[in-house]
Amino acid sequence: MSTKSPFLKTYAAVVVLAALFAYIYLVDAKKPDSSEPAKQKVLALERDRVRELTLARQGAEPIRLVKQGEVWRLAAPLDAPADGSEVDSLLTSLANLEQSEVVTESPARLADFGLDPPKTTLGALLEGGSEPLTLLLGDKAPDGSNLYAKLPAQPRVIAVPAYIESSFDKKPFDLRDRDVLHVKRDAVKTLEIQGPEGSYALLRSDKGEWAFTRPVATPAGRWSVDSLLGSIENLRMESVAAEEAKELKAFGLVKPARSVVLGLADGGTKRLEIGKGAETPAKSVPVGDEKPATPPKPTKYYARDAGSRLVAVVPAALPDELAKGMGELRAKRLLDVATYEVEGIEVQASGAKRVYARSSTKDDKQGFDVYKWKRSAPDAKDLETNTVQDALFKISGIEASEFVDAPGALETYGLDKPALRVTLRYAEGKPSAWFEVAKKNGAAWARRPDDVAILKLDAAKADELIKAFGEL
Image (cartoon, rainbow, N blue to C red; front, side, top):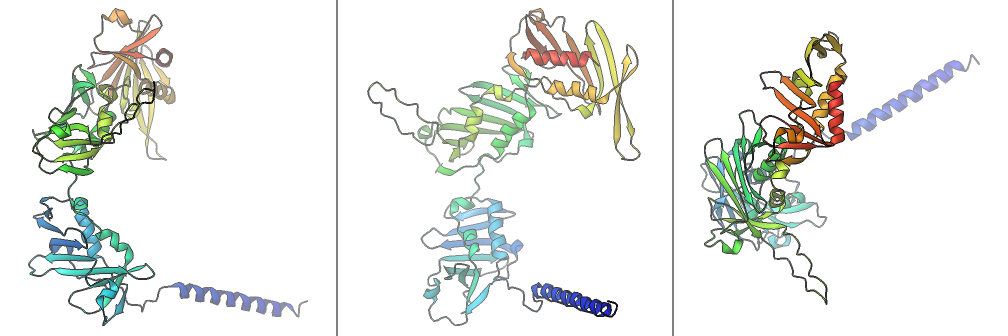
């Protein structure tokens, strides 16, 4: 056995070395050949110097875009603002376009490649230039992976990736600015809405909180209003019904069904008017005693910026959102509470007053703040942090099921002697907030600051809230 052992060890070492060399060979074989030349850019295009773009496709109107300062504008086939992001995408595709291969240096017939005439002609005029850089695009190669292309000054036909074709397949509408109002939500300070569901107005405070100013002074839900403003900010036209409407009756815009007036931080205003549906639903013909079916809701509407004569067709998303009315924007939660912001709590219940304060220490191992809660009145007692947090979470977890906007006397709801009053003290100068909860004839009611309305609550959840603060 001992005489065979050296041979076996040598044999094993040879096998291992052979496997190692084979692995190295395979890995090196997969590496790209550094000697292979880099792909050549089709156009020597400095995108920042481009001042004019032209796009002509067979069977379509030629498109001309002109840069005015830092803003792009459609100059043909119509005069209109252009969508800067769309133009930027077009420029990027053109500047980064690489040649896949040279198909032929001396083509016999350009028509064989779809280049006489070309399917698409692109031109980019640079600042200070007199002639544009031009690219001609033709047919797809038989395998579909490439597109034939040519530069006018060179006889050769080259191939470029076929996927680039979609980047240049643009209509004038694709490149125009489709933004209806040109407004940013953060710039909006006031909001007035009129429609079949009623009329109401909102104001944003310096702290960013939204509240209704009419028909009733009541808080609005921050995220609900922000969602609506986002829909207004992102409103895009799907098509143009009239570039310069001479009469508005046909679009239902003489007396718009809905209007939204935005008061801006710079003192300006924007007014959006929404007219009738842009589609005429097919009328159903009743059979016998059958009642006619309710026509479907439009999926598109006519709308316009009141400062413009352009009438656009917009999707139904925003009109449908407005149709939910004022109730959709009200602050339904009793209070929005961020527990990490609360530094102190004052609770009045069962004729007694209790005060709680939060302290923090730095965890030496983890490096973050550790919060502790303590009752300071009427006696001193350390509290479980989770118990206090759970009570605070319950405030945001209870919502109004009904609003009484013209309430009677407080005793009508038991709020002259509330079962619970909680005042929250916040950090960083944020004003304190409070709420009161009462029970009357099996129903639960509440009120809160800066709200003339009385809130009706779910009775079981109100009991849980009263209990949670009563056990602190």
